[in-house]
Length: 379
Ligand SMILES: [Zn+2]
View 1 (cartoon, rainbow, N blue to C red):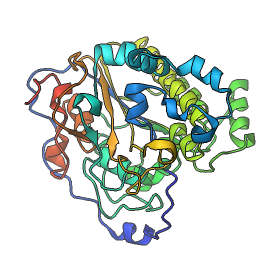
View 2 (view 1 turned 45 degrees about the horizontal axis):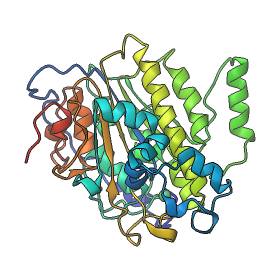
View 3 (view 1 turned 180 degrees about the vertical axis):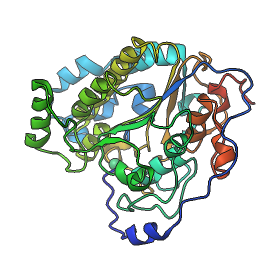
View 4 (view 1 turned 90 degrees about the vertical axis):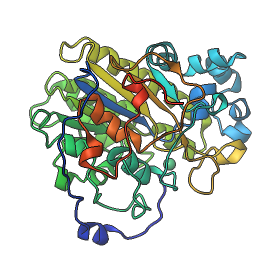
């Protein structure tokens, strides 16, 4: 996010009609799927380089990485000579559980490319591509305004068996536009909106107070930890079958030029995903029937300066990573020498895991990633 092109697009967006949806919802599945719930989780602007190779040695310093931590402390926490150990130190859940029992695409050093196809590599175009299944050239600013396109979440919420079972928890307030909340009526907990209403427990009152009293790094983006609490609390009430979770700190700290905080927030993101997985596995409605898709909205540049930013000027920003863990995903682990996978495929993959054919309803949408649905790799 944090790419303010300043173009006025709201009026235009309001004039654009939503695409017409048609076609039967149920996919012609090759066999019954075990997935009943899908959670799509995004850590904004988290590079594939950190995912696959861990902390970057050239940035563990004040000069290039802008760190305030002591270099020796940061190295003790995140530096290992062995690349496998190094990435596991940063992302223990991803590398011991997700990759071991699921699949992860995007290690370009091993011939697996995952990328965005929107040509811009910043947030709104990326989330639009991921959530609607196709890039949209009109969306060229984070200030675009309400999305004329219908997301797979909005579409799933129109289906009788999923209606009212779709929800969104995200740190970035712009998701109100990306999911076009005025039209979609999806329940969203986003940005600095205090999460609790009505009669509050002391704990809820405290968190609401922190939402109003904490100094904000970014007025549009609440801290990840502030989102995690209402997210985990929410399952005591609503039990969504389709859930979007968006974390923002990995992007913000990079823009701020603080590589130490990129690493700390990336590590915490891994812990938050683990917490969510563990919480859901304890609930009967989710146990053994929930699939996580974990990804990012864009990559970033590389080298001593360009790691901070992303977009057309920062080479490599189109490169992302996509991980999937769930009962229908064969445990092929870290993928090597695969066909390219695209961000646009995520929408139809979310639907296909629930037995729904999004590509049929939205012909512009890219096909699901077949290999995470139990199908054999295509050569
Ligand atoms: Zn950004």
